[in-house]
Image (cartoon, rainbow, N blue to C red; front, side, top):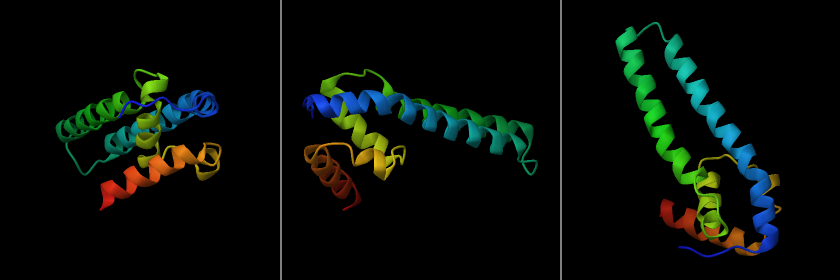
Length: 111
């Protein structure tokens, strides 16, 4: 789905994009720190777990944050929402069209 969003949605998304990126990176760093501190595992196992966390994180990061354009923004907003990186208050600033797409795609995924 490559559909450009309204200008007001685009402006809001450009403001929220770095906020959501920071939240995502903080989540990954926190996961790495927890894994690093888990003394029940060997250093090798912790290394493997950290590598896996970063590898998965990189894939998610790319899908949500790379290639910031109006034509990709709607799908990025949905992905960011699915990952819990946007608050309901922040989401309320988007148009009904964006809300409808989120509802359809999130509901469809959970069906």
